[in-house]
Image (cartoon, rainbow, N blue to C red):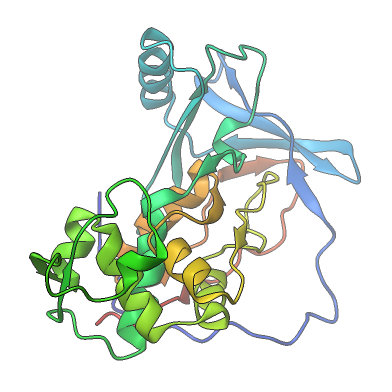
Length: 277
């Protein structure tokens, strides 16, 4: 389900909490057959301290796990959440190549590839690029070369807008626009707002999704088009979709439905990542 968030949200505080809550995290989740719910031990300083009932939907989780297993995917994970309140409804995963592998949904194993165009599109729009700006181009379907970033009246026979390029994931258009209007610091700063190169607030450890973008103009353009050194966890991918569904607002993912014998610190507040427009 997708929903719009229209409330005015405060900017995130940059002042460290002088009395931060005691570190608490969840252990490995499992299905409690007696309860018919997914649960996880609450860990404090590495020791069990109570139990959490999770937001995971057992039926949905089982269906997705069967689907991944039946298709014998080498490595696969599906994260589903409700964008309105951040409830995680499924953290399904399976590896045919490494059956013992765990926490695929929280691991930044996969290239972000064209998903990174969401970051680039944001940076371009904020830099003043109009959504209907037309760019003519050729090549670049599978990889880019510096010469493709220069206009070529003889070979640039296809023309499209930023809107259409986003919908069709047109690499050369993104590279050209980024080469004209973005630099390394701008792209890195926008990526950081979208949770790259930083911690994702969650009740279980999430591997950092990394972005390596230098200041070389072609490296910036190449990364902007989705060919850069960018890694993404499935949970992070779901949160990027959530930000769009919430018209630019990040609602931190929530895994705990209720607690027994423990108290978790307050959950992080929603925050605006990008303006609705």
